[in-house]
Length: 342
Image (tube, rainbow, N blue to C red):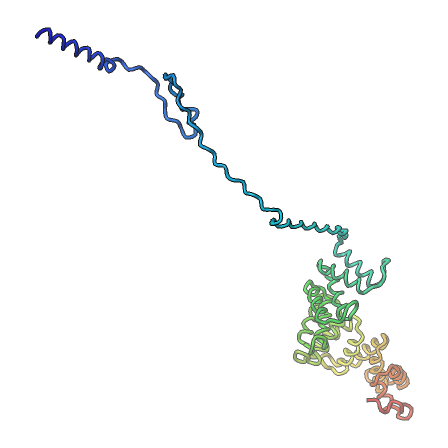
């Protein structure tokens, strides 16, 4: 029995040594290898384990590459003919660049063409071309000149509305002559029925901006006749006086009439004679007629029939009806030819 127990014990120890030995043996030491980071697998992956088997492992065959069949070309007869490429259009030769001009230079070239000066041939069309460019560049006198050309039909057909538009541009920049021209357009029937209120407005602006006696004379008429505003003889006298002192002959005659009537002015036949005389000396036939009548009647001056008739004959020879009628009244036989003058 003891022998059997000894044998069993030995067998158990042997089994323990055979089976449990590796468990009881100390584990070999090794270093920790972290998992690879994304993208670093090839660098961090450990080498493959050694192969102890003499038979090399079967190598994996690469997956067969799918070969796409090459399309069979259609017969030449079925293929559409290639479209011919359009020929590129030849580029036009570049035009020579025109030299750039200032607004003043453009205006000067227009003036030379208008007058035929500076080696240029006179041409209203050329003047119109240069002044149009100068006006577009803001040249105020070119704008005014274009207004005159469209008003008069020089180098273009008459167009009063275009003339007005150019005058408005120039007048908007304070150009007095353009404001005066606007007054003329509205005073007359160029744009339709006369608009005396509008005309007076532009004449006043022209007179405020410059010494323009005709605009002042027209303002005198507007106030004296009550055109577009109430009649006002005192304002008429003011404007006739300004125009007369600035040399406008017709205003001198009208100023004399107001002095002689005492209408809007102090009654003064002597001052009337003074203005009639100045107008007559400057060539006014109406001034001659009024002065001749004053001499014949002795109004504001010593009566002198001979001088009166001489002045009236001079005025009548110009075709002035007022003088012709006076002469017929003085001597109906001598001046019979003026009998039917209205």
